[in-house]
Image (cartoon, rainbow, N blue to C red; front, side, top):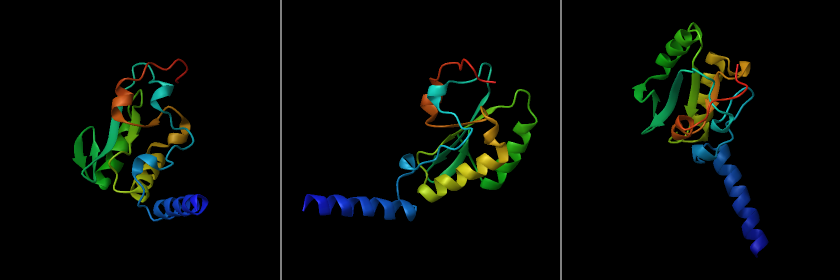
Length: 135
């Protein structure tokens, strides 16, 4: 009986995630080149936070449209040093939207270059220590 309940529970969680219903903080969002707060923050890094608030996207706490993000990312690519773009997925409506926004950031910022993108809660990034080997 317990085994059947466990199997059904597992199948239910897979279905929920595949339908984008799972809470965003439990979605597997870390991709190649992305750092986490435990990795630290590059010295002298300017950090821009992309997050969710009431199912809306925010840029450094200000609500924005997805179309505006592309312009912001283009501007940051021309800055020296280029800012670290941090994505805080908590508050996303579901896994699908959380992943979609992560993919937009990944492509626009070219996160695979390393130390350009971070994933995690804003409070954790605010408390991150300087990275020893960044850049």
